[in-house]
Length: 257
Length: 323
Image (cartoon, rainbow over all chains, first blue to last red):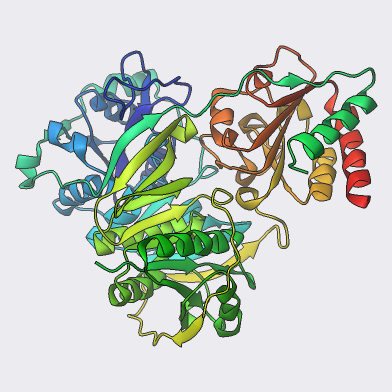
């Protein structure tokens, strides 16, 4: 089974973000970069499938040179090789453009299954997985919490509002991960040593025979959400009085009850 | 370019989602601004009768794709039918709720139609003919304004972010002849665990519990949520402890929500949790630790034992609702 994992390097979710001088991006110095958490589930699931069925796990990413650190981390978890499209022209791409680039890379590779995070926790687009599946014309299932592969097809349990649905699809297919799918492993020390020798190929858009797709959605400004001042602490003599005062305020002043 | 707006209404479990009415309401406002029509798409099995109620939110035309193969949502069938409808109607913008289905369908349509996608938008304005949307990024730590550069612009709307406005439209119903390629995927079944429960993302009131709950007994929060007509959420710690299902998690790697009122009970207030609920209109924090970081980010705070105070709040709300 040849499995491809779509990987993105993002600021860790602990990061406190600030707006950069251009007013439409975030400051990237002093940020701790990690594999997007949902992509980590994808790497783990790919490794588990390979452990059962044999095969290869190939990571594909679009990003700057430092994104190779994220690929190296996933290689240390156990993936076999990585491909990084590193081209400054991709910086202006929207999610759809990135998906076109990923699909172009993947067309030249053998694959039975593609796994992606449901979304990257920076852009929050929920777009790339679905779009890559569409460009490759393969079936797509999102938000998967459990899967089973048998006889050339995959059964996926996915989350829907208030429950789950079971979707069956032939392979090759692309599915995206949901929390609950697995608990990603940590890279072991031998894993880290081995990863140093594993290949990371880099490509430019010229290597792929394409130009950066023009963005159809263009970010023009970023701001920080209005910060709340410290809470008004509701003080009263007894818990009962506090509860009554809170409900009064919520009803009469905030008008939310 | 057409000035029309097309809204996709999501029919699930015998009713339209509230966010679908929000999408229609916003679609009506946009159509009025641009001087176009509001067309609504309904896809499903046996939805002809229910589709009529969409006229109450300003639909000029209701296109109904009624077919047994559209009973359960599948990306490929819904994308095929919706893409054909969109090509025929050629609207300026396509709106739908940012639900698990809407985000999935919006993304697939964006790729199929080479159309811009703005996901999980919380507001929208026009700059001339161009729409500028605001959407949270980085789990809500950043709000980004983005311009939609071409049509049809596909916009998914965060539940509870756009005002409902009931205005009668002519609501002329048209049946859409559904012709489907043989589907590769199939839905083997659905399991709805919380039938009749209000979904976390659509609830007006969310009562969440964290590590301070000390265990899986969330009954005090459930009682309060019940009298407030809301839903129960959880912090990542509570989910990691196995006290609540993953689907209840509020935060940067869980659900990002905007209820009218959010009550954080026994939640210390990690930055990732805050990212998931800071667009709530009012945030109340209840914690026994007066130094808990959540108090610096809430509107109202109550210091005390949540197991004592929450039932008292429930009683007070009951009294208020009874009067």
